[in-house]
Image (cartoon, rainbow, N blue to C red; front, side, top):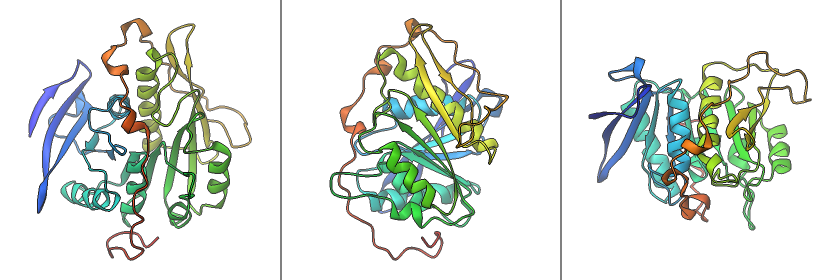
Length: 290
């Protein structure tokens, strides 16, 4: 395992997890400096179809999350069944991780890889529907003792917010939802200068949710404020748009002018979700029976 410092507030460690007979799984553990040398991850997270550990959506999210808690991201392939097995290998190499997550196809894999020990699921840009199917059954089959957070852009062509609300109303487990105003499936916003800051804010909000959540406050919105050049979080509200949380996340103070232009380049392949084959219904006894 190698160790490299990202900045004065965070550090990263790279590692490989055996995955025979295939090549080892590449992982990056990001954490606050105070958690050195080798912290246990609060979240195991993976990217979408065609993405990598260097994809903007993953880098931005992980950076925001790691400002509060350790997160381990792993590199997968484009096959859903294989990604589920990779989750199992990564989870097995850690000490009782209870929170799994991913973006796009990675979110689907997280749902299907959940075990009886899993307590939280983080589903970023969950691809709820295509032109041919609605991918809601695995969500409806989740047991009632899980906590699930959805993070979706209101411009996501693969997750209509009204359809997501219909699914949430039918799910047995408790769910929360963060809407990113103006974001597409790849979590890109306009102007491009806001994409990195919005992605980091998403990670911050989710990290705080994993640490503790209020069952009466289930909805929140992240907005890119172009006038002041920063991402802003509304705080949690009730589903009925009741009173906001008294302790909302403090808006990020970094100006858009300081945003790296390289970070804002988006790989189109990570913003799409392909037609992965449906996994077999029979699953390992170690996973939740959903």
